[in-house]
Image (cartoon, rainbow, N blue to C red):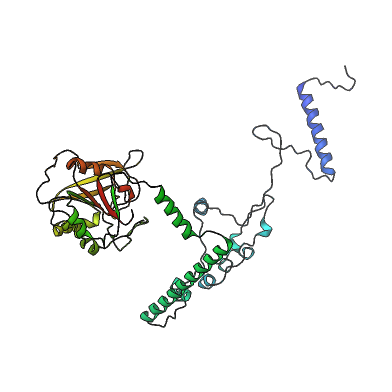
Length: 394
């Protein structure tokens, strides 16, 4: 047994001795000048991770006792009113709006005093007056001039800008020649020559490169009368948003130019096939009647993608996924006519711009086998054996 061990007769005597020892320690700590609260036990955490002193937060500047008011403040903060004078003035710096530099605690949180925020400290960004903006400020036109005078001055400025552009293009071409750099126009011309040299027309095709507007149609009509005429006119689109974001890679012709073609000289009897766009149906029917044809049928080409899905394109009201070819007849039926040999619907993949499907030529050749075929407004991709093709892009 140890010499300093103390034995008590019962539990009550042991508790009395413990209370006396604790009282002496507490009185001794109160007499000393130690304020670090060494003998105050800290409240243990819920998980028992050890005792930590609770961080003391700075006192709030204003207490809100009502629970409903607190709920409104947390969900929808009230916006302060901004006076007209402060709205038109320049914005104040942030330091002038939030006077809370001294209220920042150790974590960087800022306590904003509600009582200190007033209308003088809150300002808004100035709003420009859109009504004062005008084109004359940018174009250099006097607002006091009449509309006709303004239009004339704008046209003069446009001409001067165009002349300046031409002058700059000439200077660029001269510099390219001096530096030995090939110009964009020359490179494009060479690429076209290479493309034409590499292209090989079908052996039995008859391509005629000519402008259809000044071509000698009477000479062609005296040499041959055709059984079938196929046309894909470059219809002029509507003047209001004609392309709708689509770049047209060919020259369009007005309706009056297409009307002037002497198609009636090329056939005494036979069929005509005219590709038509949606807003030219009425015009195409009038052309048929003018040239002496009667509408008898039409062929629909449903465009498809490489994955055999419907290829939708631009349209004014609906997305277009098909093209229509009107069929007209003139005179008596050709002696080699074969009826009901092909369908009036073509499901084919969409290829280049304005490039029609090969199935169209197959339908015509099945309808009138061994006939004399003519295509107007043709391209290189339209050349086919035993066909006469006329166009300015061959």
